[in-house]
Amino acid sequence: MTNILRRFVRVIRVPVVAILLLTCSVNPVTGDRELAFISEREEISIGSQQYVPSQQSQGGQLKVDPELTAYVNEVGQRLAAFSPRQLPYEFVVLNNSVPNAWALPGGKIAINRGLLYELNTEAELAAVLGHEIVHSAARHGAQSVERGILLQTALVVTAVALSDNEYAGAIVGGAQLGAQLISTRYGRDAERESDLYGTRYMAQAGYDPQGAVQLQQAFVRLSEGRSSGWLEGLFSSHPASQERVQNNQQLVNQLRAEGFTGGDMGADRYQQRTASLRAAKPAYDAFDEAQKLIADDKIEDAERKLDEAIGLLPNEARFYGLKADIALMQRRYGAAIDLYNSALARDDAYFDYYLGRGMAYSRQGNRNRARADLQASVDLLPTAMATNELGTMALAANDRAGAKQYFQMAAAAPGDMGAQAQTAFLRLDVVDNPTAYVQASVYLDRSGRLIIQVQNRAPVPLANVTFELQGILGGQLERRPFSVNNLPASRVSEYDTGLTLPVDTDMATVRGQAIVRSAIVN
Ligand SMILES: [Zn+2]
Image (cartoon, rainbow, N blue to C red):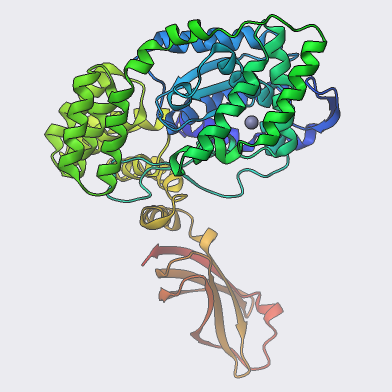
């Protein structure tokens, strides 16, 4: 098993193993006693393993503006110092226009570029980050894993634009856990808890807690004026409401009474430190329009919009990446590779550029480069498209075990790609392990004919299924070959073996059995 596969398998097993370690502990944020079977070490391990794929599935980090990430991390660390749980807190800015923020267990937090546009002061940024810190510190994500809410819905689909198949961008493997964690709804109590303690940490860190109220007021205004795009991010899980504004105002009044007055709003500092992001907004708006145009099949218009974006912000890798995706869709592989190279020269840590370039190399017949690129994409974010292609390549190189692992990962995807990968996996595994799919027994019918009863557990028809019939006759072990040419999928079938025994034969003395020797997928 490759390291990446082994790591993902281990993540999925965490909750199962952890059930044995059920302990009663005190929630460090709320002081409540609660059952916990995921230890702090496991929380941190889930968070650090899922952090990269979760960032990748949401657009990757905003590489064009590292000072902005440094700023957000600075504000986040200033707040995290007042969290009662010392976790390895990290804060990143994602290259995503949807206004959103999320937290994984173990203190791994992200905020989208699209949300930063909507904030006006550092205190408002602190309110967002403080809220997410509490989701991590109070174990809201870990609790959803413990309650088994996650990993039951098998698959999460990302919007990867490059495909000729709508499910090509499906996340497969253990990274599904992170994808679920960042889109999960925690419930009203957890949200109220996050507002409550987040605003408190904010005040303790020297910010004016009124910033939290202003933030909620701004959200209410925005949610009234906007349509779908606004609702798909933060506000699908955090509906803006007058009630939330009022709750926060009460809390601020209480904090004022406790002596938290004269805090810092940090409006000028926020404007100054986010100035370059604001200046770049027209470029990202053009990019967003290009994506919509592609969805509407207006490819030439989309390319014009992308050229416009590149003219405004020539260092943003994503603009070249989307042009490359278009070239790949149009089967212009050389042009696609050149454009992916331009993207990678500006950001070498986004899965889509490796995935797309790997697919282009593969179509050109350059297997070594294709394999290296596809593996690099899987290391960042395992997708059905990459694992399926890697499986096909492993098989071409006679690496059956490797091919089986890749196909098995890709088989989790919905749609045609998942079904094809499933069949490709079975084609290999049925040959290797026929007894795992075919089970057989024999009995004598009333006229003394030896009947074989065969169960095909595979979801596909099998061919050339061979058996060895064995039995003790007259004290001698007798063996006879038997074969079935076409065994229907997922059912029990019976066949006359052509052998006849005396009608009064006792099968217990014959000890007849049918041993499965081989099978192939039809
Ligand atoms: Zn929340």
